[in-house]
Length: 247
Ligand SMILES: C[S@@+](CC[C@H](N)C(=O)[O-])C[C@H]1O[C@@H](n2cnc3c(N)ncnc32)[C@H](O)[C@@H]1O
Image 1 (cartoon, rainbow, N blue to C red):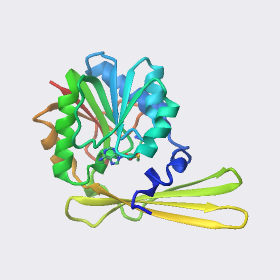
Image 2 (image 1 turned 180 degrees about the vertical axis):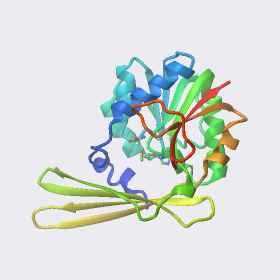
Image 3 (image 1 turned 45 degrees about the vertical axis):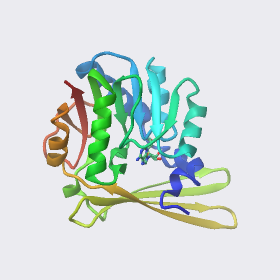
């Protein structure tokens, strides 16, 4: 199995893993920020779009949506879910589109999949290049200085005579630009049990260096990690929403 089996061989379980995520509220948050800070345009690109749950909501809000993801099995599910959207396989750290977008989103900490700071710089540069003037780049991030290796999120769900337990946790060694997202899936059926362990290499960053990387390209606004509210970041929490406007 590859280290990211969840997005390839096990992609059929991805939506089960995310069953508790409030995709509508997250999508509404990006839409609202775009209304406040953006240019009002409706061309939308979702980076690391996965199976397309956010795109489904943006399409319902009359956006003209595109999705980019590196793993084709995820895109296959996305295309089935959102037949009206355009999907392409590619790396968010080096992408180019003929047409420009008004809103680019990257949800669920997926920007960390850039892997290392140099690649993250490529992602920021690509997003800037693909945005229309006044467009917004919206994403959420975690500050490596606040990662607690003892914390994890876990939930269980019944599906087709099996019980699935999903667990995810950040792990950061305390120095350097790499952290991992450790994911496990445990499937218990009547007479069998299977467990898969994924270790996803992610870029580790702090908000100060991220702001330094973004500021040559964007006017940067940082908010508390609460999709239901608009609260400027209070400089305490290690999770935040970045709203970056192309000036
Ligand atoms: C945690 S999932 C998020 C999917 C979706 N945004 C969501 O919120 O459900 C991360 C996604 O990032 C994709 N991914 C990982 N590295 C990538 C890269 N370098 N470029 C584009 N997509 C990438 C994976 O294939 C996966 O679909």
